[in-house]
Length: 377
Length: 76
Image 1: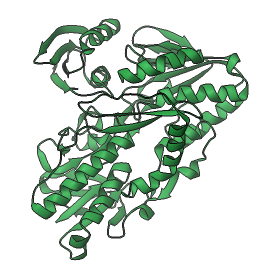
Image 2: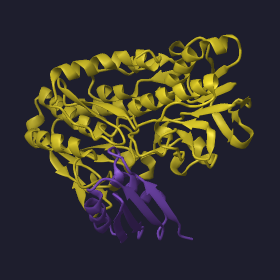
Image 3: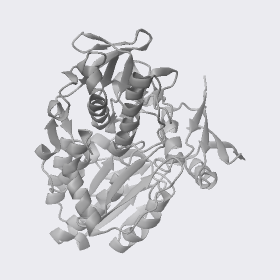
Image 4: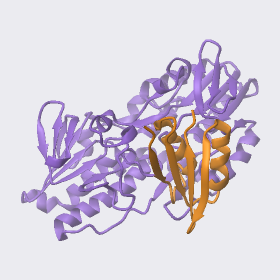
């Protein structure tokens, strides 16, 4: 049995390591071959970018060598897939090699596309890449007061990030002694200040306490960097001195180029996590078109289900579990408090008041991630 | 040629039905019809509110066995 994992992010790495352990005997006696193809030899802890934007982490702290995270019985290659030949059960890579499979796992992730909003690249700061997070920190460090606006593109990875950014921004500006010289305005695409109703109920009074202005039903249409104005699809506009954007996302280009899903999102069975019409192709993480959060947490819980099912197919000929939509997200509420949201397809999150111990747990998790992605936690 | 697309956002607490609709609306062409399926009671009010504010066309809204079926035509 040839198992091929395409993508070395959170989901792909957890799937591969989990399978490597569950199928160690089968790999040892060569009944199973487990291969991973990734676009990079490095693995980034993406939630750390928020801390980089506030000078609390440096970019080098966000990376590990991908191979060092993988079990030794995984055949790992830095060689991104360029062509999926699903009918022939094979893929073609950038180097020109062909890899055959019996079971394929696609975990290629998503990418930011700020260029799809006129003016966003030139006019807005973001923190969704190493370079932009460092640039934003330098802007914040030089900021001496004025109007800071946050706008949110759709769809976007880590739906909690806009709220976390505002909490951290408030604390950072207070620490620098310029909070009273700064007006912060938060814009959100739908009719409440967060898509999760309970998060909105919890965060709204917190934002009011911090003096944050909120405008809902604001979908970014265009940014005019010359005049420092951001305009919405809904017909309103905001003047700013510093604009921060959560950029819109798409799935990876290779998915669109292979006509596997509009926007780069692959149509996926919400319980089995298989590609629609392809029982031998599993999809997880940001790559799916499922209505669940695009976060490492969703990828993690999906990866556990996918790995257990593939191992069960090898051992007893059938999958054994369904994905229930589980997501667990930490929510940083400033520099010393945090809470969390946990939910699935049937149970909404029940938010607890933010606390210092939860922030310490999140701080610890920033290191524990490397254990988690090895499939040990 | 316009198309019809069904968006199954049942059981979605995050990103949620309206955010899903906005995602697919951006991918759609003017004249396309999107049918949003939602188990969130709030969708019956917040989807028409957004559709009206942006200027798309609300075609129908009905609850069938606990699932809201909201049909919208992209107008701009």
